[in-house]
Image 1 (spheres, rainbow, N blue to C red):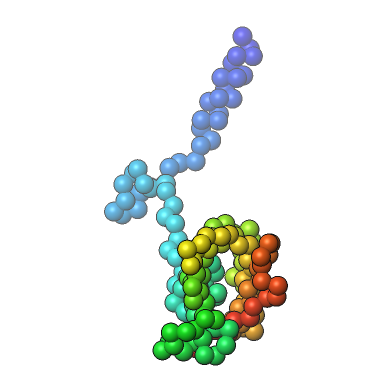
Image 2 (tube, rainbow, N blue to C red):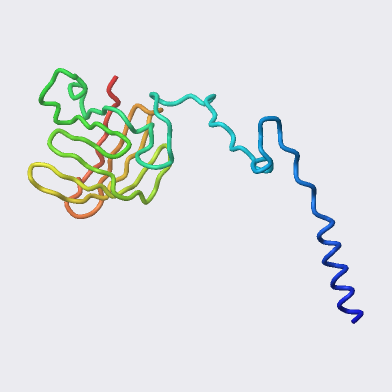
Length: 159
């Protein structure tokens, strides 16, 4: 009997130690008074080229138009075979398109991922790494696996 009284007193003491509910702020209902609003997104950080890094996809620093040679960046040319256009979801080349499949490594300056390619009536998959160098002016593309390009390709950002 004495044991059950001690347990009952301990339970009552626990109920009384609870902190009081906060009072609702003006214009707030009692249902939402204890909830904490999420902070508004910061707009003080500059966004590169108007893009914000969502943490998924191809990093914003890599997005844009890139050329193997200066002539690839001329928008009036129909034969810019070294032009690579990068957006959040993939890469576009002269005669093929690569869609981002799965990233295995991702930071603001480097990404390694599997890309699904289509072009000229064929489909293939390629493991590639994209790395930003020279303060964002150079993008190096390395391929891995069977039929990969033997050397890295260096692209220059189109102005």
